[in-house]
Image (cartoon, rainbow, N blue to C red; front, side, top):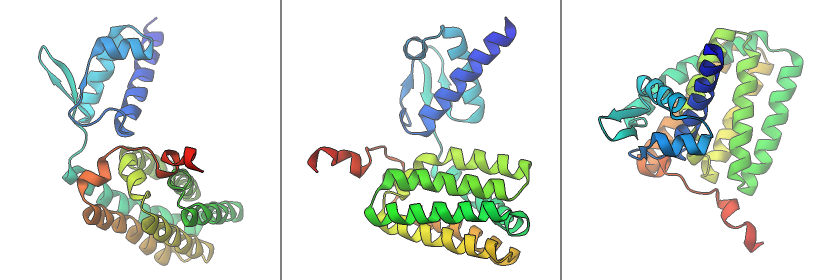
Length: 232
């Protein structure tokens, strides 16, 4: 029974965390146990436990007699995460240059080809999906489970920021070019170059956040191609 409860609580935590990080629940929004339990089809107990766990992660703040409120990440938090991620991505790319298999390199190149197609067309949703696939394949190619898991966490935490920056066609095209350069260095087994390019790639994302402004980067809106689907 305890295992079943723990599993249910974990599932609620995972779903609620995803809903916060994806921007479904916005910063400052109040989260009611009753509403969440109805939405997720569970009792209030696993919801309450999930909210406590999210408070420990800093994603929600508990307010006495009022419930929970989405805390989200501050600009400083995001900058810190990107700086840490830049160092980890550099290490990852360097390891990939050393350990990646020929098949993994081919898969990176295939992903870049598809990303380039969608970036040129302005398909921001598909570019975001391809960006996820590129980084996931890069993490696999480093052949370090511990490093890969750390990077997946940071990649997940900043998903709404990544999604919104990639809505800029200029940034999505540039990002694809940076991916291609990283993959080329990995293919040449140039560890130093791959590491340097991967670190620079993530640091360029920080510059992009500063350029477009925190408010624009963290807002949640439908993808542009979704808004115009009925017009074509």
